[in-house]
Amino acid sequence: MRKKVTVVGGGFVGSTTAQRIVDLELADVVLTDILDGPPAGKALDMLEATPITKSDAKVTGISTASGDYKETANSDIVVVTAGFPRKPGMSRDDLLKANYDVIKVVVEQVAKYSPNAILIMVTNPLDAMVQAAYKVSGFSKNRVMGMAGVLDSARMSSFIATELNVSVENVNSFVLGGHGDDMVPLPRYSTVAGIPLPDLLTADRIASIVERTRKGGIEIVNLLKTGSAYYAPSAAVTEMIEAILKDKMKILPCAAYLEGEYGIKGLFAGVPVKLGALGVEQIIEIKLTADEQAAFNKSAASVRELVTILGVQ
Image 1 (tube, rainbow, N blue to C red):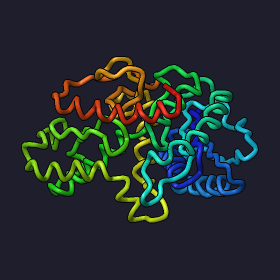
Image 2 (image 1 turned 180 degrees about the vertical axis):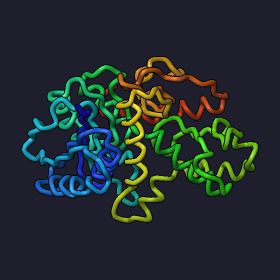
Image 3 (image 1 turned 90 degrees about the horizontal axis):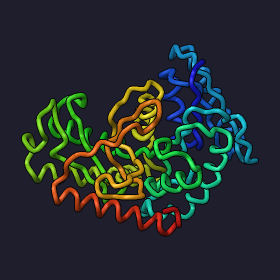
Image 4 (image 1 turned 90 degrees about the vertical axis):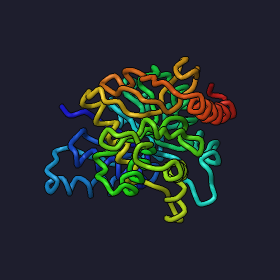
């Protein structure tokens, strides 16, 4: 029997995530949205593509306008993308209160119908929403995580590959901290075919790439004007799903609950973790310089400020 993944939120991120899961035949998918019609229509469209993509994965779309989540029952993984999108001139933090109200309702239903699921949060402001989901769900810390570091690292890698005119397959980037302007890209842990980035680029060029990485999300928002990124975010969350469903024990940067690691306690923050069948199987601690630790602490402080506002510490 195939695994089951529910994607909550049928917008661009959610529907593209569902499509990637189905195309890769990773699991059967339930796509939900508060709208009546669009999730079913998108699911049917995806299903009709499966003879071409050679995937036997099943996909259904349901409306949760009535609050009915029964069809999501017994999901192995639940991805939450539901919430209000960011608009030009709007920070992730502006989304805080509005999206918390959405997340609370969703997670309560998810916990009711899929009490053994692994929960992957995508809704912004990401780190605060993961903390909220952790508190609302009552799930163990290994079964709640946020998608951020995979996306931010991919953005950095794409910029490095373009700068050096090399294959993206040669590039491995490393971004820690919260998913926002205070994220912590780590150039000395980023490599090109195993070569440390500082050996290949000047400090000025690296600083430019780091800054563009931090502003990666808003750069796309400003270009789109009526939405935010979804191709890269959906690819990022799909990589996490694959690592979990295939028990790959793959090390990826994700928002995970820290209990003293990196000097942070009782807070979700982006760190390298080992992803497997149980979710976050291990948090990997790396040695940071004083400046890197200070930047990480600043990022964590920004997240803590938000979770304090929400009262979900």
